[in-house]
Length: 329
Ligand SMILES: [Fe+2]
Ligand SMILES: [Fe+2]
Image (cartoon, rainbow, N blue to C red; front, side):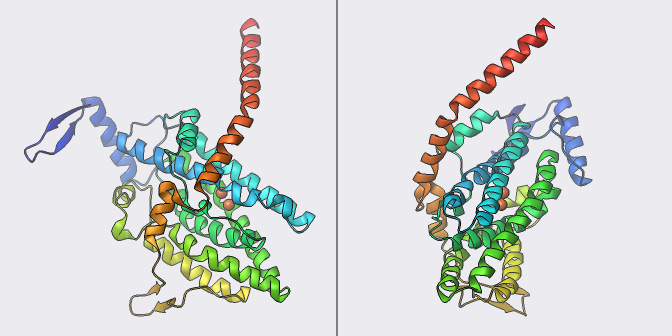
């Protein structure tokens, strides 16, 4: 693809006839609300945006295992331990589907892994907060997985086929995760006064960070417009946040707890939920690597990767042996 300078000084792409045909077909698929598949021609910017979004999503699933994995050995009963282990294992699965999906865009897994471990890639800021009590397992499941669902259900219709299809299964599992979190909080809330206090404290700490999971306000979200035009994103950050707030406002009543937001009210005039100001300075600092647990999370990931080197070597040796056997046969 060549570029030429236009009159206004802007650089615009000059497509070859083949690329132009690809672009026309791409535009048609998007206009028809159909799906782009890995072998289809796609604009480089579309490929790049999706690679960034899908790999960030995969990294979030993988790093997101850590706050909960810390509690597996301290779960209060065998039943709770089994449920939490299954949940953390689901998150590993989500990471693996999403890495596979990202690879269909042309970036190998090793490179994606490197981007995470060297701190070059981003992942969801929420996983850089510590999980201090057992009730945090409830708050994470209810609020963090809940926010993930609100974000991800519309992604089941994302224009890139492998992403949309992966999201269908992921969302089914996320809704189980949310219910298990809700159930932990419900039981604690109906327990002793100390247990109820622990549940409230967990909700207090995870409320604002979970609202920030939808990303900055629409007025400060530079990539959203293009992602919406490409039908990757279907709703704006603020629209999704609104939907989530409307949901948890009702559910907190059943929990018998409160949301730590004195400003929270429904504004009938605009039809929106008004909530507290969120600390976007803190959000940016956590994304930039300066949250309470960023260094610890990345170090743990690097250690786990190094400890797993022998598994990768064994798998590669086995694959090579099988390939030799096929050759001989
Ligand atoms: Fe997940
Ligand atoms: Fe989950």
